[in-house]
Image (cartoon, rainbow, N blue to C red; front, side, top):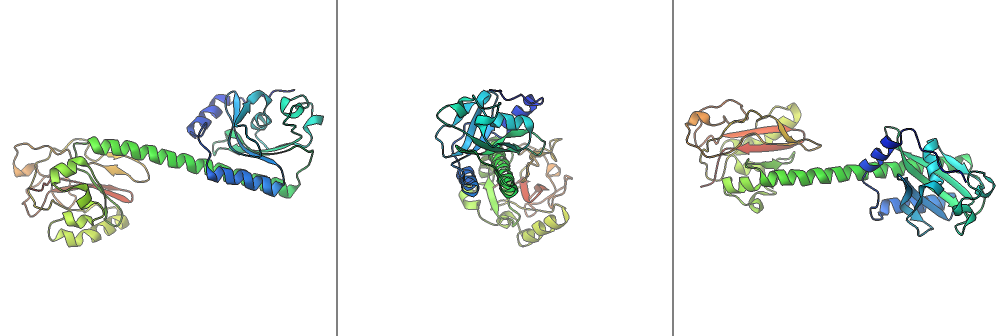
Amino acid sequence: MKTPPIPPSETERLAALRRYGVLDTPAEAAFDALTRLAAHLLKVPIALVSLVDADRQWFKARYGIDVTETPRDVSFCGHAVASERLLIVEDASADDRFADNPLVAGPTGIRFYAGQPLTTPDGHVLGTLCVIDRQPRKLDDEEREMLRLLAAQTMDQLARRRENRLLADREARLKAVLDTAVDVIVTIDERGVIERVNPAAEQMLGYTPEELTGQDVGVLASAPHGDRHAAYVRDYLRTGVSEVVGCSRQVSPWPVERPATDRRPLVTGPKTWAAGATLRPRQVGPSDFWGHRGGADAGTVSAGDCPFKTLVRGPVVVSVWAAKRE
């Protein structure tokens, strides 16, 4: 038996595999469906999504067998990973690399194997989508293309799964930041509907999250800006120019400090959230208020012109203002 060679870029390959965060996770319907489909289309009893770890191959999805992993040194998939191309073994019992392999000579009785590499965009092979039979056989060109397409679908599912996991992690970190921030932060979607109100906003503005979530953010704007708020958001999405204003239910100006990092995004991603000012009560004059209408310069404002500052990036507008409900 010939053990699978180790690829020259094994360290980087294993790091790529770890980044997908899929090893030892529960079964998922999308991957199970792909192995069932592969077995059906190629008329084989066994199909696997096999990921090759440092010393084992682990099956994210399996059809036709119960085991969840086997040692890497007896794996067929290890050879496919090393070759970085489709591996077809028509009769393992007649192949010097596999004839005395326990998966061939033992109860499993593998004869036919075909494994299409699962390759990341940067060229690392994580494992294979493979099909197995206990009888020798061949694959014609159409069947090879089917296996290639199914492997591509498997890789798409792995990439989608990774992106969803990263988004969930980012959302959890964002929630922790928002929940502990001293800044007043209200997040809205591209329609201007409030999605989230952090505890500092609840304390400062006097509204509960239940009162504001799902409401148009114009409810926080004093006249005449409430009626114009939808237009402000539309203009921002079209031009990228920020012009959003607002205040609490009963307007009372609140002094704010302007940190040097006021324009720096708090968290970046498909939805970018940012904080524009740190709100701390202190005894200052009116010139220390932010100007309204998204201006960055401090100016004199009245209770009717509730001081307000926004940072807007991407499809989500994040508003931070200096006002409170009395």
